[in-house]
Length: 310
Image (cartoon, rainbow, N blue to C red):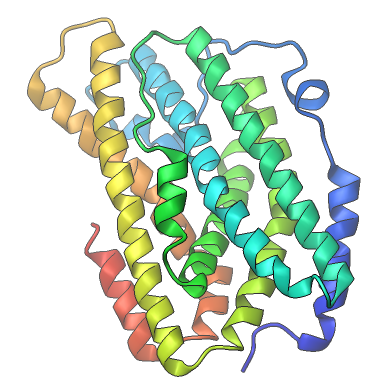
């Protein structure tokens, strides 16, 4: 049984358009407003960075590590939005000579994703001004997007909805009411969240619409591709955790033994896996939509793949 009521799809696209118009924002006027990042404040909240569990670090070191993770957090969103935009533009072609309400919703989605990418490029530049030299964001967004786009549409849309949903959860549960964070950083993700809310609806509609057209064999390939994409994300996180731990060790203000650097790297990797994989995979709505499409055996394959990352 399809998760989405087919008779309601145009109305749901129309609501996305209405919300998009109502919450539209400008990078300089509504977010940056002439401000700079203050390194006396945390960027990423403890619920996401998990720095409070790193008992060997001082308060100042935990704050610095939250800033590194916050910088990476923004860069990761800039990366994933590269392939999300490419895929939504591709699947949106189905609406060109069809439902023009859906077409407008998809076009607005794409324009907002382009704005988000610009925002995260700006944030990276501002972080570079505030923080010590030597930080590196390891993956190349264009190269990653090119690889992702070789996978099936089903697998890519599954990953996309996963990402859009955890974006909302992260903001509502960890960022929105946290008064210890940089106000500028909070505003970045407040405005990002405002537009990602309707993106998640469109992702779901497009995924279900695409799923309706597939054979059982094609859907099974989609499951395999989703598993492959999650593994690829984990590979990126491993490389970035190593880079961020090295940058932290070089700039934390004291000499760190190799064992402690390795411990920080592992803790950062665990935080990144929670942020970018498990918080989305465990999202109730994602499980509900996914479960409406797949067989129990396919669900077990996905769960086994996730368990292998622990």
